[in-house]
Image (tube, rainbow, N blue to C red; front, side, top):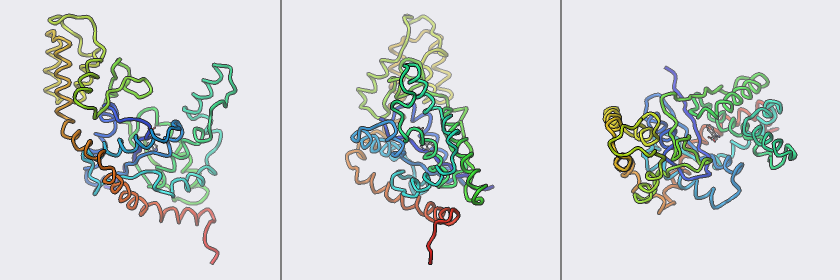
Length: 335
Ligand code: TRP
């Protein structure tokens, strides 16, 4: 069986929350343990600049996201864990790919299209506030992926289009210059449920309904108490399938814990009690990592060391491929 090369990045614009953990970080850490799987996991800090012009926030988020991966036990001797901006070959490839990517294809990218639609709705200039960074976002993402010959890219549904674009750009390049780039496949895990937030919608920074992963116990308790419920009294049966409390419980619980909580709901567990148990469950699962997370944030030099070592491993792949790409397009030494 050929080796699977899994690659994914997280944009460094926020504090990791339970949704990031359940939907992306935990499954990627699990997958990185498999035999015949190579994992490339990175901080997408160049991507952060597209939507965030607050340097302190980008820096802090980079620290927190890196600390999260490490605290949760990512084995960096097996996985390649790095920061996008430590790999100069990525922006270099991004330019070369820009010269292959059709503008018409980029016009259809949903983040750009949404910005234009928003302007049109306000009768503003369609390009108002649209930077070239936003427009080129899918090309940079293609460079992230193609630079490491990734075969599998685990992403949320909203990112499938970008993987299709990366394939399209890679095919054009290969057609023109020879088969140097590997066409990646999007992996959308149907089993990993999208975690619900405080209000029952998808847990997402943009909805302001998140529960931070590594808050203090007190704050975690407080967040959980804010999860939306209804006015049913203790003793009245409650519907587990429409409750974010139960949905979040299920994401952390074993199968038997899930079944027994389902029964409790049907038997009318009080909301206060259900939330108390949810707190205890989450705290049990992530409590040990919280201490490691705090220790890492208190000593960023350890994180930096990990990232620099990871960049070295990543560049061992990127540098030779970039050499071939440069040569293929006609950029090489004259001597
Ligand atoms: N754009 C992705 C997101 O916002 C993050 C990302 C950047 C990424 N480069 C990537 C994901 C390459 C997968 C592969 O979620």
